[in-house]
Amino acid sequence: MANVLLSVGYFLAGYTALTIFFYMLSTIIPKSAFVARVLASYLSLVISSLYGVFISIALRIFGRHQLAQWAVARSFKYLMGFSTGVTFDIEDADGHLKNIRPAVFIGNHQTELDVLMLGCMFPKHCSVTAKASLKKVPFLGWFMALSGSVFLDRANSKDARQAMQGAANEIRSKRQSVYIFPEGTRSYTKEPMLLPFKKGAFHLAVQAQVPIVPVVVANYSHVLWIKGLVFNAGRIPCKVLDPIPTAGLTSADVDELTRSTRSLMLNELYALTEKARGQSVAKAELEGNNGVTKVTGTDMKVAA
Image (tube, rainbow, N blue to C red; front, side, top):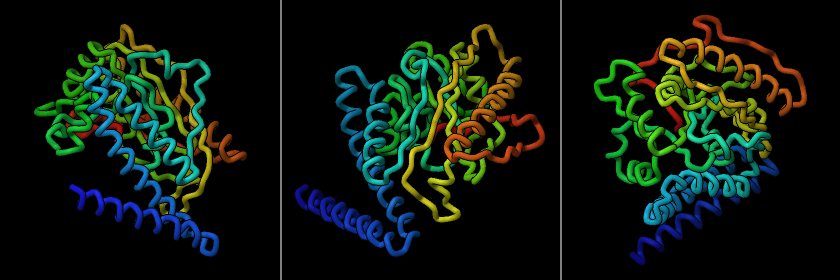
């Protein structure tokens, strides 16, 4: 055990020294800042993950495991703020993150940096969702199970509604909110836009009869743009919109609910990006299908 701890200590010390070296090099070669912040991000993620295992066990012992993902998210927020100088400014004037529970929170998905966005805004008694098969994955599955993740049973599912049923029941019974990225994948776009929305999150909210709470993040390619090897320090605006009630809605309403919510979020995305950049932005929209795509229980991607 002592040898293992010593090896881990040497690795962390070497990794930290390498990160500092690239930060120093960035004063001469600016692109080195990209490498430095990428290294710092992964180190922060590793430390937060290790913390997550221990805090999940401790909170489960005391019957508070629903707070585990919130606690880990906050640790990542502070580590990233210190090591990279990047953070998200959360605008939630009406306190929806604190007061609305349970709910299905949804947001636009740009890059891997959205994990930090979750770290900054993640409310208590909320979790990500994951497919049920992940329960069997060592470490990751154990942490997710210990920390109260809502698992989706997609086995033999013919559509999103069937895949969501078990999760909807869990949301109601445990008053557990969830966070989902309805685009299903990262857009990696330099300008503000939304990919078509998959309908799984909306089926889930309707089945559970809980509100949808949209969370919109400004396009932050001025902070992180992977194709251009850009990774700068900065503060990124993020706004929590008013809850959208689903009480009384049925599956027949999901298409319109998805379309109208996406339109609302897109307009806010433009406004927030203009705020972040201090200038107007081009407003380009994808054509076809009103920004809504069909999704089955086996292909819907969720918060990751």
